[in-house]
Length: 555
Image 1 (cartoon, one colour):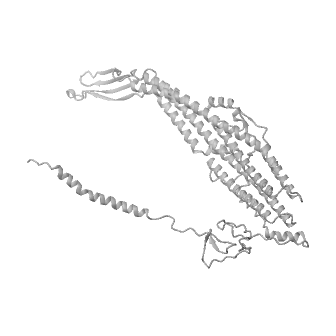
Image 2 (cartoon, rainbow, N blue to C red; image 1 turned 60 degrees about the vertical axis):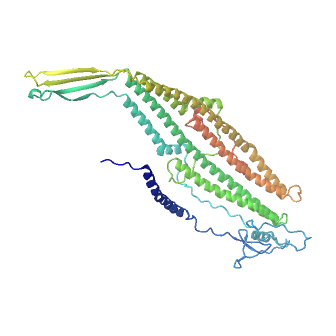
Image 3 (cartoon, rainbow, N blue to C red; image 1 turned 180 degrees about the horizontal axis):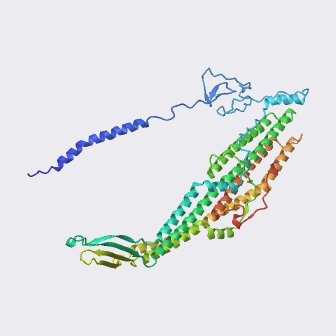
């Protein structure tokens, strides 16, 4: 029966009829997804801001926006309003959008000479409140002995999963090297021939085959794998250095946080004392009432810096505990000082030290040797191995019950496949490995130049803070404030005291940042040189003796 071909136009028409269904399905899915996307996030409204009352207009505002709500309960401060006379000078207006614009104007009662100093101080204490002290969270443990950097490094080495992974990689490479040199096993089995011939058992016996590897292929292959072991050991060394670097960095972050807390506590104490001294001047009628408030702002800011320093110290300890692999370790004291002398190192010495022992150089050299051995292996691979075959069988086809034996030697003839492709690949890999070594040297040299530049720069800047900037700024501040307190000295105004205190605080902050930059540069340099001892740089450096401690400067 002949089938008539289906017209092409009919097929096209049927296909077009099915398209609306597909399209409607897609549109349905799109509508579902679009509906899901219309569900907004954060449905709970953010609470409104504080109600602020403008002392000049008497209007209540919420975060600077005027409010007509009569239920707003706010107490207006008694402040003189601007005169309606256009010719009268207008009072300085604080923008109502500014937080704190509704604060009561400071009104100091007139000085009563009949009052005692104690009475005046009691009155001033109500106008100028004391600075609340920062609460010490007291999270540090006091039971155990302080931890040294060496003890922290040992804890990290015992608990690091990264180092264990690198050790496992070395063992894997070692196993592959052992396996590469093992000789092929012989094959022993049963062989039966001519079974059932003449209604006999035929030939029955055992056979033995053995492949004899020629041209030292096994030794060459094993040498290649032993070089892979060397490369894995270099990677293990790099993993250990990276772990030591992480511990060093977090260790000095803890020391820096301790120093930051100590210096900020000193600044806070100084600011509180100056604030109280200025209150005494106002009490005696020797200073304007607003002057202590400006100093109180500085004192509160210093107190806030102390709180931040305490939190930074807690965070630094938690990061250190995580770096050593014990994130739940309780807080303990840490030995050392961030102001300890840094090692001194010459660039030429560092460069020679770097290029002679860095793990990237060692690994690149090992991979060159591995590629060279692999090229040699591919070149001798066409030399055929010899396969030996022998069999001993009992001849049951004759009444003599003789024993028959066979020997066979065979070799593959490299006529077509002479391993040309693998040889070319191995040669290219050797060229690539040599270029990797050159690239590693160039990259390490460039990294050393950048790290040494930061090392030189920040150690010099830190030393200048310790020997010049901090002592000079403390002298300036003392001198300015002492002259300001002298009665009748018209050459020093309060603005100079404010500037001197701000400059001192900024100098201390910059000094702490310089200390952080200095030790980060030293740690980066130690990581690049892959030293085991940070202080001596494994004999490549000597500790500096010119660094001075800045502790006495702030006392």
